[in-house]
Amino acid sequence: MIYTLTLNPAVDRELTVPEVVYDAVLRASSSRVDFGGKGFNVSRLLKGLGVTSTAVGFVGGKAGELLQDGLRSLGIETGFVWVDGETRTNISIVTQAGGHYIKVNEQGPFVDEAKQLELLELIGTLAQPGDWWVLAGSLPPGVAPDFYARVIRALNTRQAQAVLDTGGESLRAGCAERPFLAKPNTEEARALTGMPMDTLEQVSLAAAEIRRMGAQNVVVSMGKQGALLQTDRETCLVHSPKVTEKNPIGAGDSMVGGLVWALTQGFGLKESLGWGVASGAATASLSGTEVGSRALIESLLSQVVYQSL
Ligand SMILES: Nc1ncnc2c1ncn2[C@@H]1O[C@H](COP(=O)(O)OP(=O)(O)OP(=O)(O)O)[C@@H](O)[C@H]1O
Ligand SMILES: O=P(O)(O)OC[C@@]1(O)O[C@H](CO)[C@@H](O)[C@@H]1O
Image: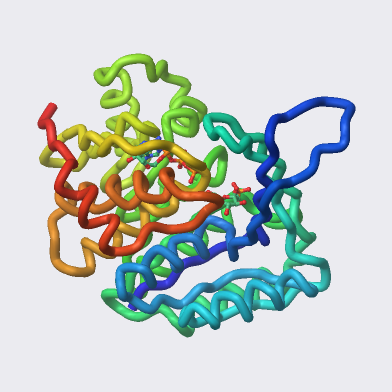
């Protein structure tokens, strides 16, 4: 079973405008809503690849109901802890011609200690040996940076595999609990290690440092360049297929979804990352945080190039 954990989900609203002008009323030519937050995006990608996952997390208010109804309507199971505040709505403004966006993320509702314990208990009852858990996104107010670390400890005790996609102190504390894989982007890896990320060699050295911090395997995603994988046996660059970018937001979530899907199908880590970069590229080529279909992902997979380093 695959679970996705999103502590701070979001209704993602994308508004398309002819151009961005300050101090003026902009009229949207189109808009769309996605049921988002990083882990929920992973669940949507997995569904596109034909796998039902369970989306777990904190939700609240009308926006929480919208996410619950929306995910269920897509055939995704949910396991939520309901909080008093309102789940956030995050706004993206993109231009019709593409190429630029403005994104504003709300903080999200406050989550008290009792709700946090309720979620940890829920995770403890759900997790079984051999399960995959994707832990993704920022922490809502009230949740301490060691929360993912506590979750990973609980998953390790139950022989479930953790894939961690977050940043800052939360990533540092999580890595110390030896997750199966950590997936920072270059900016998150730079912030975590304090190391430069200007050349491939530097990205590789930073990945090694993150492995020293505890992550068993590391993928550093590098936008349209693809992603670098480092395990105890190999380091390789997986080049992303070329696509016309429409909205890259959520590409990292799709990458994680494609990668975890392939791992559960029995592919090795390198081949799985191939599915990951193809899935990320598919999402980058679509509006909002829309995820690619299996047909699109498979067509892009044939253009993925693997380079050992
Ligand atoms: N413009 C693009 N063209 C082709 N592939 C892309 C593009 N943007 C992203 N990708 C693919 O998606 C993967 C993840 O993208 P990125 O490194 O931007 O993740 P991220 O910063 O975690 O994104 P987000 O936080 O918005 O989900 C890349 O490694 C790449 O394979
Ligand atoms: O504030 P966070 O949790 O870091 O990121 C949240 C978010 O920007 O990430 C997803 C795209 O990756 C969106 O669905 C969502 O709005």
